Length: 109
Image (cartoon, rainbow, N blue to C red; front, side):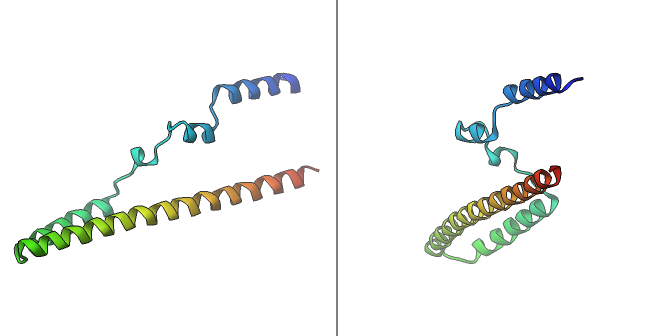
């Protein structure tokens, strides 16, 4: 296969695949849809639920309301933390890819 044929094949593949940045912008990619429930996660949440059930037996209704508010606040904090970690990881991955590409281009010449 000559260089022109190879370039045309690569161009055809590139045209068929929508860039990830466009997929993200268009809402076609949702990281939450492909969340992997690990055995550790399942075990921890199961144990948490059991302990929480026991705890709720010993507190009053007003204390339960306060506890529910605290859980909601903690949950919201977890979402923010996840966003921060995701953003940092994405940027770090991009920096890594950029370094690899720079080295590949440097070694080419």
